Image 1 (cartoon, rainbow, N blue to C red):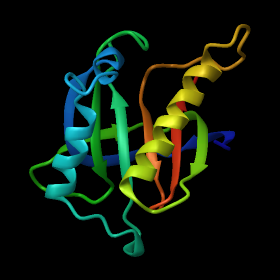
Image 2 (cartoon, rainbow, N blue to C red; image 1 turned 120 degrees about the vertical axis):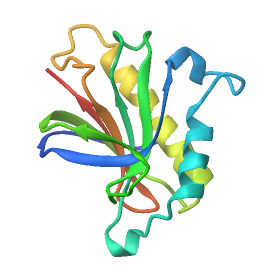
Image 3 (cartoon, rainbow, N blue to C red; image 1 turned 90 degrees about the horizontal axis):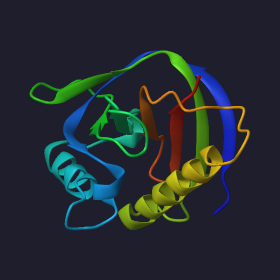
Image 4 (cartoon, rainbow, N blue to C red; image 1 turned 120 degrees about the horizontal axis):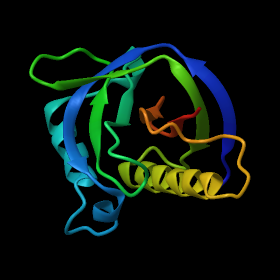
Length: 155
């Protein structure tokens, strides 16, 4: 998979959606993973209209520690809605991993974002890495049905 990496300071953003607490270890197996069901729940509650400027987000926050600890994940959009959880994505310095799915389907989008997260883990596992994860708030930004960026907060 081809992807691009760039640094960016992003303004604060509020995202509304449905949330759960999980771990990366739990997400490795279908029996314990919560993220797919979370996205299904969100899709049943909210319709996102990309043509009207609405966007999808997967927000990872409240990290217990690092990649091994618990964190909160929220599947959502930037569209304010009553009855949904909300999370504030703070203004911060992020490293963006960007890719484009070959088709605008859910399965292709999932495959693309999983590939991007693999690149994130590989990138930060390198020795002598200048960029270090902050484990504050990270997020997936779906700018269109095919374009996704994984933003990782860095120190």
